[in-house]
Image 1 (tube, one colour):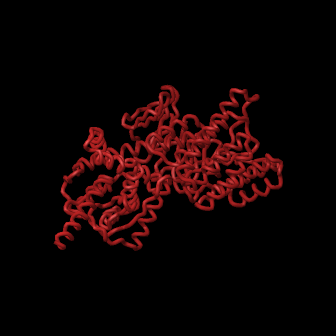
Image 2 (tube, one colour; image 1 turned 120 degrees about the vertical axis):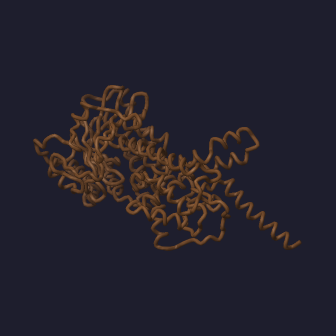
Length: 542
């Protein structure tokens, strides 16, 4: 009887483990038939583990959603599910064999690892397990049956591929479009049949992955278009692009960028401020507007700034340590002439957030904004010290504002005349515009007035984006890829330093900080620089 009791308890224990996995939706990429969960699976601590953990941490930071506990991560020696989530332990695992598959992707190994981990993180953040668990717990009701149909493996896996791919891109791992190849390699490495219980067939999963990659690429293009529209001063249109992105993907960066475009749009209606404000994109102040603002105009400006603050609050709610949002919120209050709140969010909240994260640029900009606040409070010497500290740290805005404070002239490098027509892949924008064709698969309606268009491929090293406003006004961007080997009209190419660009084209009309570097905006060109200040891509626009 004792032996029977022990055997029965063991059976129930194992059965409970399996039921728990099924109920709480560990959502593994695969579930190898005939393999039972191993509670004592060996956790690996090695150079490879630390490399993968670093990739995992980058994905968590890029998601920036700390409203939920962050799952821990382990590399394990199992050969059962490739990757998955244990919701009881709140732990994401990647199997050593799956890592071996990723390592066969050469230069794209890190991107392949990021693809698998971001897939699992997306399951977690999109609450796929909760929906599956709810359907399981209520399967005796009609609503439970309906939910079970809606939340099948195919829809969850597709969404995890889609949003996971965008997460990997936003974390700096590039656009990875080999999901179908990874799936095929995994099936082969694990000795799996084409059809697994509870999953789409291998061929269907590969087809879904390819389609998802196309959809993900379009989402990334919309995000990039929003950034480009911000760069050239089309703030209200960029705002709508960011809003459309939030319908698909929520992150602190998207909320923050949404708030920044609202601030810039408000500044576009204001008289030119005396100083240059350190909103995250580092744009120069717009040209002065004639006359005094009417009460209606003042209310409109205030409304935009208040809306921006709500967006910054949304970013902060996702990540209370996200320093850029505190700085931008302080800037919005300063523009509303609420210097008390501006001082608090800059000198207290933003500085505290900088201490807990790696935000050297924000630290410089806090000094810039505090210098502006001190100058506006008639504390000229304090303002001078703050601007000088920012300039010493490498801030262009600190240098400019110091000259404004000291009433010194701001000298700009004059662009060289007669540089010639800019072409990318031997095509000028005039030639593209005269024969503008549209790829219907890469078209997306942003709202009732805005539509995002792309042309069919015109070569292997560039893209053409079109923002269509009211079915009439077109803004066209022609973007190079990072592997483009051509040169600009002034013989600037990929890899050239910022100093070469300034020498050839003069100082930009405005600059915009990005997570990877900076955009330098000229009359018809945008240069996209990386972290080392070297050219990664450029864009011609009209």
